[in-house]
Amino acid sequence: MNLKPLWLALAAALVSQATFTLASNSPVILVPGLAGSVLQERLNRTSAPAWYCDKTSDWQTAWLSLSAAARPVCLLDDLAIFYDPEDKRYKNQTGVDVRAYDFGGLEGVQALDPDLKSASGTYDALIKGLDDKGYTAGQDLFGAPYDFRLAADGLTQVGFFEAFKALIQGAVDKNEGKPAVIVGHSMGCLVMLYFLSRQLPAWRAQYVHAFISVSAPYLGSVTALKGSISGDNFDITFIPHDLLRPLQSTLPSGPWLFPAPELWGDKVLVQTQSQKYKAADALQMLQDLNLTQQASVYDIVHRLTVPMPALDIPVHCIHGKGVETEDSYFYDIAAFNGKVPPAPNKVTHSDGDGTVNIASLQSCKQLGKTVEVHTFNNASHLGILRDDRAVPYIVDIIANPTPSWWSRVQGRLRKFSGVL
Ligand SMILES: *[C@@H]1O[C@H](CO)[C@@H](O)[C@H](O)[C@H]1NC(C)=O
Ligand SMILES: *[C@@H]1O[C@H](CO)[C@@H](O)[C@H](O)[C@H]1NC(C)=O
Ligand SMILES: *[C@@H]1O[C@H](CO)[C@@H](O)[C@H](O)[C@H]1NC(C)=O
Ligand SMILES: *[C@@H]1O[C@H](CO)[C@@H](O)[C@H](O)[C@H]1NC(C)=O
Image (cartoon, rainbow, N blue to C red):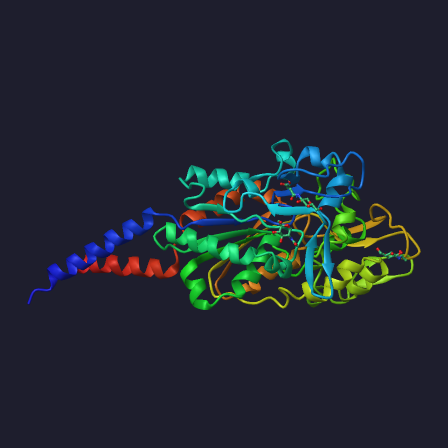
């Protein structure tokens, strides 16, 4: 019997299937970092912190618009979040609703206020790069902004992970079942690690083709300590260092990003004239600073993603290096028991991406056996998403997500056609 026609038909079917598969894209989901989502607020307050603050409003941009930033007293009070240690739940400010803007779309992750774009845009360059490759918002390109005030436990409470799961399943269904590529930046990577590690292996295999982790502080960063102690302006130069401190020193996401004792060990990270704090002393430091809310969530949040779980899906770790990064602070006061200076009096630096220390960035490679690491010299924490080497590199991974099994199948097909 001559089997050749059968083989030919089979090979042809496989090849056409292959062409078909390659023609459609793996959907892409973008997950921003701390302060990288647009947050909207809706007010119905009975009191306000100052006479010029709105008490009622329809949904409006809170984080971050120029008009909101111009009245920081109002903004900080509206965005305050409260933790009830009794029932372990978080609450918005009374009379304030807060939501991440345009969940599923791109407007909540692309840039903050258009007027502030240069200072705060997150994913605009990558979106442009994907747009050039034919990706379309809502079809095969999605954004997952979230309430970055919260750590993963709070995000569970407000239903983010359920919404995210529905988003990714819907995206995969829309694209002929092709599993998605998730791109996380900074804290967004921790949000994703938390989510992915809690799904079943079969779910991950069906829905996630690859996880691209950009600038992730899996084992924390020393700058997060500064955010709680004296505030951090995220290098947005026109924001004073300590302006956001009232918010930063209360948010549950802060201690989630504190340096992990596993990595920093005995190194002294924060000092006053009389005190020395290592990573393992963070809770004591919060108590000394009278930051009661962050102290009460510390035990929960600093263990949400540490020790790091491993993932069984392909992971690409991408980060900058060779940028001076703060690695310890000295506050020239007797002790943390009264007013804190608006910025540390002495700062030491070492390698990193300007925000996250190199050893924490490198911890990404612990995520599993299928990790590919790519570093960009002199690329900063946020700058890497606008870097003219890094952005095409990321677009390339997304546009050609050729898994090794596929190369093997292709190789066999080629051998077949040679035999035939
Ligand atoms: C605003 O809050 C008050 C209670 O403080 C409530 O009676 C009223 O219905 C609320 N208004 C809106 C539009 O939700
Ligand atoms: C804040 O407000 C939004 C909108 O009402 C709500 O969905 C969310 O659960 C609230 N967040 C917290 C932490 O209560
Ligand atoms: C600590 O904070 C609480 C509530 O924020 C305040 O009532 C108390 O006076 C503070 N104590 C010190 C020593 O600053
Ligand atoms: C590193 O980046 C900064 C800011 O983008 C730039 O001014 C500097 O020239 C770069 N240095 C090197 C060695 O490429």
